[in-house]
Amino acid sequence: MKKIDFTDLDGKVLRTFLTILEESSVSKAADRLGVTQSAISHTLAKLRLVLGDPLFVRSGQGLTPTERALSLKEPAQKVLDGMRALTEGRPFDPQSEQIRIRIATNDMPRELIFPQLLRETRAEGAGLRLEFIPSGVPDPELLRSDRCQLMLTPLPPDGPDIFQKRLMTSPLMLFYDATQRTPPDSWDAYCNCDHVEVRFADGRNARAVMRGVDQSQIRPAVVTLPHFNAIPAFIQGSDLISTDTALMKQGPLAMLDCAPLPFECAPVSIYMVWHQRSANDPAHRWVRARIEAIAASLQT
Image 1 (cartoon, one colour):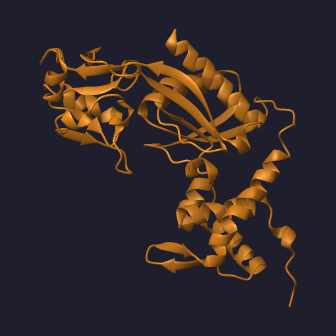
Image 2 (tube, rainbow, N blue to C red):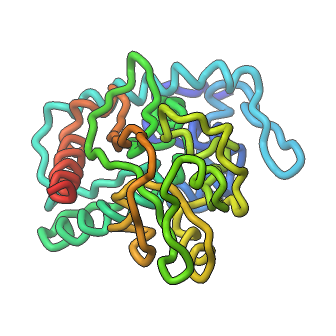
Image 3 (tube, rainbow, N blue to C red):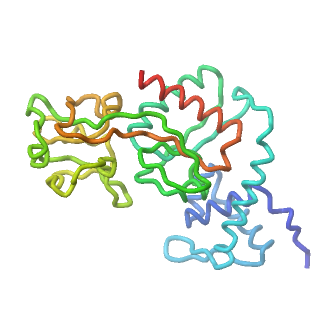
């Protein structure tokens, strides 16, 4: 019987394994990595042969990892992180490299920053590819597992391996349709308004950014939505209100009227967050610097 060489486990094989582990599906892993399902299946077959374990077994519509596969998750990620570290001191030229980055963020940071970033870098001839996933109230495992390489969020996750930098700070505002109503002028009036709010896929509420107020007094929302872009369609032509950052006026809520809150509430900061494995990567540093510059221009 032919002996299998462990050096067959290159970085692409390990990345494929981790992606299948995260997606529980060959087809979803193929979509995420931009390759064919047959390529994923071929890599998985090689990995099974090298490790002497099925790694994944079919369960319903997906794949369930074996105990061996689960035990390999952290070691495989550490090997990939070590391979990435070998490139930290390399020369970097954005015009000659393909830079692909997956970003976890919600509507407002995505629309305010990244269209401009892509326009500018494409005009310079840089090969930047952006992929977005919703962040909701983000979990540090998104970064630790390399499910994304960057987050923009007002609720940055904590951890000794998690880095963050504040990009922007914005007060919370009322958004409404001035043809239908005036904004509430007191805390009691605000609490008794009919509200539109966003609740993320994990069940947590966007109101988490409202600090220092007793939210239990606020009337339950009339409309609950999965993302901010849907808010204007419900507020226009109605007496509904929404509470969001003033920066939303430059992005998803540009078509609505806005007014200050009729009570004291701390402003909201948007943070850029990344894992320590990306801290010194020259391509990642370049992207972070471009994001910082655009965010600074939005505050002036």
